[in-house]
Image (cartoon, rainbow, N blue to C red):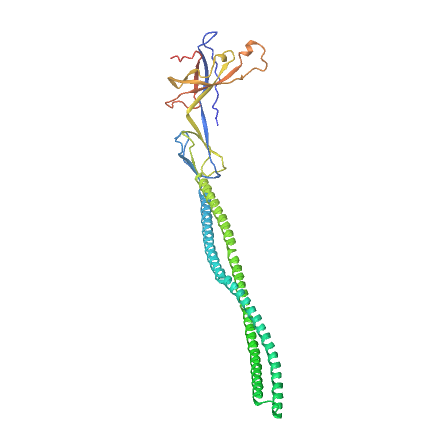
Length: 410
């Protein structure tokens, strides 16, 4: 912001009629100013600088009451601590859930392995045993049928032997046959009796063998049910494994909660940084080197954000604005050297340069119609003045020479 000091408009008529070497003017010294403003609202606790005081960039100039900002910082730090605790708890929950799920899955997998151990061999053995047992039953049934057929044959033979023996005995009693023929018939009868007895025993044995084979077949059914029970155990173990593996879904959910907690912690930390930064704004510092021109507020005042507490002058940026007549403005170019003298500093000359030439006239008459009227038109010319000794002050009346020939005259 440029605060304009009083603009002195002087008049100058000097030099040659066609091309004056110097264009003279009067003006007031001006300087670029900067407002020292607050970035936050608050009550002014202290004003540390006074009018005319030279200050350095970054030096403290004022202080606002810190209580509210301090409370906000404390609250933000508490929020960071709470968010950090939630992150720690969420991280522990993830670790615990991961470990628990890993252990449950490992245990369930071991149970599946244990339940399935030997089932293929058992199923193979069951198939062999089932086939063997059915073959044994079939063989026993065949032997029983064969033994039963032998019983029929033996009983037929026994009946024949009994008839032959009775006939021989009758004939022997009549003296029709010899005794040795009767003995031979009796021997045949005894053999038939023995054969009938053996056939009966064979049937009994065959029936016993069939019962044993059928009993063994029942054992096969029992073994089959045992295999089916083992398979059911494997299915149950696999279901338990699937249920244990579902714990990884919980782990994923817990990780998502952990990510949300970490994001909340990052936000809390960012908020803490912000309120700490705002708290730092309670101390207002000089934005650059300069001199305090005015103090705009007093201690105890409540000011809004952006309030100008001080107006700071840049003493290294001094300038003046002179006004050149329309018939001389063509001689003025940016970069021409200038000389400035001050009544209160007799004998001192301050050099400078033209830095700006307005392209529109000022202070015109209402109606410009004649050449005489046109010379009443003036153009603003800005002159920057060098003051390495810091002798000049804004507001000082100054006499300025623009050296149109480009030479600085003594």
